[in-house]
Length: 307
Length: 306
Image (tube, rainbow over the protein chains, first blue to last red):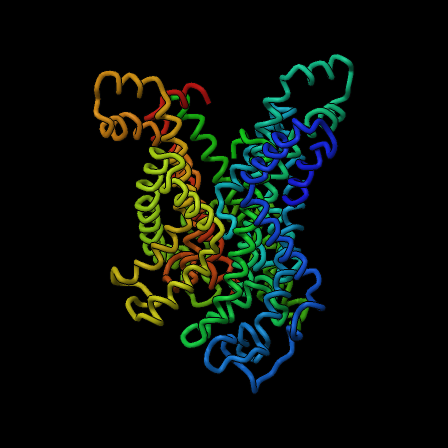
């Protein structure tokens, strides 16, 4: 995502132009790019993660579900007893860890992105409504936000999953529905400030309907803010999703997910450290990379954004 | 101050009401207790008998009224496993959770205050950059994984610390650090940005012009004002802190409310779940309320403005 953003930056530079101006502009563009270096590097890694998850069936060395009892609990390749066949070793029933981690990325990314789409939609709609209409609408929505924010997200997700039963869809729904207050709060505050601005007043004086003002005049100003929050939220959702799966309340085995692999690995951590270590490392790297991208995106879109 | 207090109190009541509805609906709207309690193969009359017995044939608001009026008196019903009142069961597990939360908060402050202050005073220095790295990594760290890695390193490999359990101070070290690592990044950022903002204020210049030593300027003049956003956000984050405690507890088999809640959820022991949810929420809400009061006392702008 960041790569295309930086690309757009460079594309603004004219390819042909006055020779004298060229080096300065090029240097300025490079300097901007350099300031976002971490974001660009993160985007490159993210691209790799997304690509390997998307192309999982063609890139992994083994079937992630193929059991091989005779080769169970094999250590990573660089340790004694490890083979090049299973680079990161195998788990308690001899499944290849690397292949399972690559497949696990699919679950995390799908859950992260879908849950964020759900919560962003709910949050933006309610935030726009609360900020624009104010009064009783605002009070009701903000009270709901306060109730949700008071409550530990994890506990709510746990309780609802317990009743609905664990599954991928249920997890997306729960994480999606539980995550909207953050968007709502930010969007409301911005809408509140924007409602009094001249262009909105002008729109109203011209006889535009409320819906049209919200959609055409207020919302476009909020897009970059929402995109930044959503990016950072994907990382949070991935961590939560893994935690639920870790507890056995998320994605069910044998489907590989980073969380449930970590949960299974915990049982073997006394002697076989790698089973728990690598899935966790995958979560950590992915969330780190997403956070770096989010930060860079914020700096690029608006350095003054308060987040 | 009185009006401020009043407004906060109204919100407190509304939030508690909202959470009790949430806890009630967890079981009664989202799920059907009868389906959970009576085997599917049981005859239909048995289902009906159970429904009557639990009062589930009455309208939903009557049921909620009953639930709420009993909950106010600390009666959440008996655990579906073992004939014990849910309230006592949850209350018994409360102290370990509270101790863990406080210890985690302590660790977070121990990391965040000095690092954040140094970063703010020496902007763009090595310390500042180091802080940024710590903050970014800390925020991306899934703490349940961090906990497991700590166990593998300090309990399994080095055998310095107990892997799980509760009792001695050694048991506190790893869980408190895990929870502290969860909270430290955001605290550090707040300390840093708060201090940077304050250090540019006129009164700091005045203090310096008066010849006050730099150290005194930072500690006495700047720090106090920088604390306001830190206290506010930490208060609001209390729910998240408890959420972090839930995660930490499950990793270290800490005998707190969170472990009990997760166990009860697994067993579908809903009276215990509801009771734990309401009590935890009550703690969070009162913590928020107290923080609001403290901030209102320190900073007169807030009680007049907002």
